[in-house]
Image 1 (cartoon, one colour):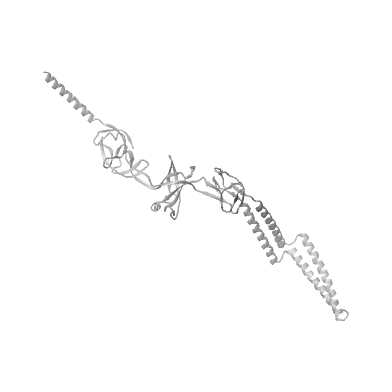
Image 2: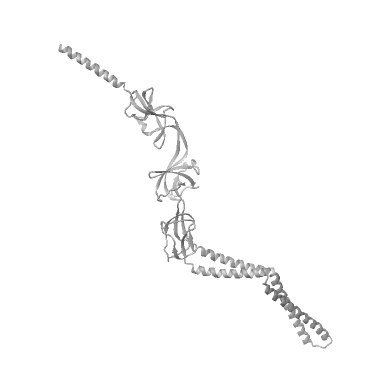
Length: 398
């Protein structure tokens, strides 16, 4: 009897276990899925670059001298046209003043030669001409009478020669008075006018040269930027061409070196994604050198940035966007590996394994082959399922 009860209990226990196991086997696993579709992402080439200033200008004096004043300090912001440094202008000021006076005097002489004398000078010249005419007229009459007397023997040869000489002198004075009158009323002769103009132009050139040297004795910024270096101090003697102040523009760039192969794929104006620390920015390719850098063998390129204020020299990651890539993109962490890459998809309530090949990678996503549009990629609980398991889709991402 005891054996019969034991067998009965054992049978009931086995039946109970089998039923429980069947329940566990047939239980559906909840999963989240993503419905796959064709998507388009950036096709990029990747580089590492350095943050630089778009303009770094070294300002120097064109003529040497003693620095009278430094107008800026390192770190100062400057605007276009702001003064940076000034030379001692004492000698330059003297030379400028003298040359200005010489130019003004030469101009006055030229204007006088061109337009004639003043009203008073014209009146005096007219009176002198009238007087010279009258005097010469009287002398001419006297000379004619004296010739008759000489021919009659009433005057000696020495006397007639003296009269002839006086008449000739008065004729010369008349011609001079006429010339002075003509100049006062009409201006100088063409050759005299040209000479006066040449003197004025020479004096003007000399003045403009001294004015240029005077203005160049003050350095002014040609850009909006920040002072990054100061090479001399006030009172020091500086030679021409030696940098005194260095100004960096606020516009920043990322400098990269392109390989010969990649130069075929890029165009000026194309966009780039620039990553500095944790910050991601958009930039634009603005220049590529025509010849490779002698040291690196790469083609120097500049990526322009907007509204940035990074320290110069910081390293940045650069992704140049050369086009778009279309395909099926999935999260990288959904790809598993066991001899080959594969993923799990849900088909008719069951788990199916599909092998995939990774073609591209972008921002945590991978473009793969081996999947089809509308496949339901399992993106949650994928670590606890296996091919053939029953699944219940509790969330579906389109």
